[in-house]
Image 1 (cartoon, rainbow, N blue to C red):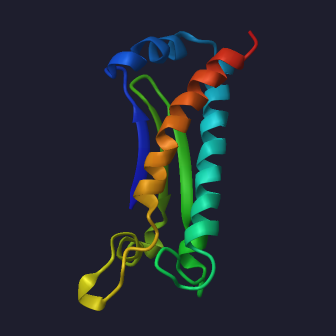
Image 2 (tube, rainbow, N blue to C red):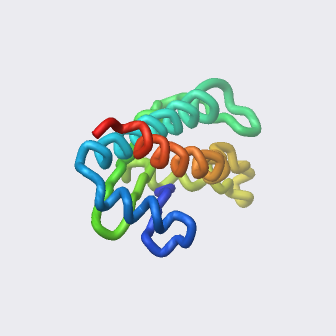
Length: 139
C-alpha cells in the first residue's frame, strides 16, 4: 500500500513554480526535498503515534509485534518529469496492512488506520512546503 503526492508539470496553477524549480540551482531543489522529507517524517510520526500505538479502538491498533509500526517508509524524489513524495509499508506487512486501512467486513475488522484521509490533509502542506522552500532558499 503506497500513498503519494506527485506534482507533474501539467497541473495548471503549479506550472510556474514547477518550471521554476527545475530551472533552479541544486541548492533550492535540495531545500524542497528536505522540506518534503520533514513532512513525510511528520506524517509517519502522526500515523505511528495516532493510529499504530495504544489499545485497539475505532481508529487505533494496539501495538503487538510492531511490524506495521516499524515498516512505514517514505521517499522524496525530484526528477525531470515530476516531484514525488511517497509513504508506504514494507512488503513484509502487505498481507495485512490493507486490512487495517480498508477493513474487512467478512472478519468483522473495521478500517482503523485512516492513512488515506490523513495523507489528503497533508497534501496542501506539501504544496506550501515546496513554495516556501523555494522562496526562503538564499542564492
